[in-house]
Image (cartoon, rainbow, N blue to C red; front, side):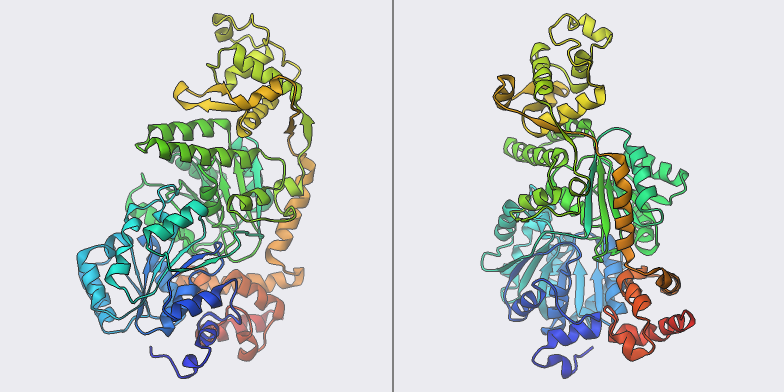
Length: 610
């Protein structure tokens, strides 16, 4: 597909943006990144999920001579990425193990004959000698290394093959390389630079903020029922992802949701490959489907209309939490990141870490990351400010779009209660877990206490004025703030830290959070739903009709609905009601190719729904 003279004018990137993608202007640093790659420079790009990272390599690949080679970690997504490109009229292809010999040979011939614009390939295949030899015979415009945080041994998606990709600099010294990620703290950024030999690369660090996402973290206990309440209140028919720590829990929750009448599918490494591929394909192509998954699911997911991401267990780091919640609301519309966790999650994750084969240094750093995640959960101030601060970004004012801002938690002076809890840990010999300690404080008739003679110590029953739920919350907050620590080698026993001395001596006052008042939740629900589609009541029937047409077309072509048009584009059609092709082309997301292919059908639906 040779480019026209118009596209090779002074600003060809702008022309391609409009022609193929239907947008009027670039966002964030897209224009500067594209200019750098076109000029032959390397680049490191940090851009939030949904911020348009793919345009940063797609447009330069269309402008520079040759083919853009995209290193992508999940072969299961390549077909959908290529389908999306081909729907735009861009010559995309992939090479991976899912293809038979004839198909793969055909793609290789297209590559060598210059008949491709973009080629997707997994790092494992790229590193093979025969692949490198194949690419050396082709005309390469650029290399894009997507999900570049996979290079970091500290990361939640670590892929050792990524650390070998520095050979691209040696084998293809004149070809620009662009590494892209949505998740990387300062340590990970430096590791990307070092491991990929990007010391001379221009760095483009965008804001990590996703203002369209509402962050909510619920207190532990009855997490399954809390999830159901959340879904009923906010997402009765929406597509979303539910993350669980274990495969068994994934299977249980998926089956339970299905029994409740919500279509849900499991996804984890214990399922056969064909089942995982089928479930992922259904999630991408069907609307309103819930996928229940371990962290094995989701990296690189391009589905733009995921309206919620829910966690039923604590993520192991803030990077993991940010990456996973970032799969919600990629279209820029309102979305929810909701989580319910318990202290047992901390113990389980810590035990998994201790049982791993990592070095002591690795374990220490990873445990620090888990502590930071726990602190985010138990804080009483703006969660978004803390989340951004972790990535060295400052948000001057509270965000107004997290649970602590929307429903500020009530706090209480818990200094005396904290002294009782800390004293109880000491009096019982720092050998027991939270449940046992709560029994001691509550004056429980648990036989274990009598067997250990802990019904005779001074802290027995001194906390009977507070219920067990309050005590468990207090222990979680003391651990999150570093006054207590969990000994994972001692079966979850709680130990005092040096930091607790100030509280025990009465030199420090400490406040704890109380449960959020339930009556305030309804206003948040209304705000979220109203902002989600930004439609007037009279526009809703047309929007529904446009979605129905999109679903029909997507089914005919066997592609996800968003490959036809994103929700945001349909919303604009419903609001603006274009009457002809010229007016329809002005809608953001309607490029020349899609106007030619779908314009008449959508205009007919608009005409029938005045």
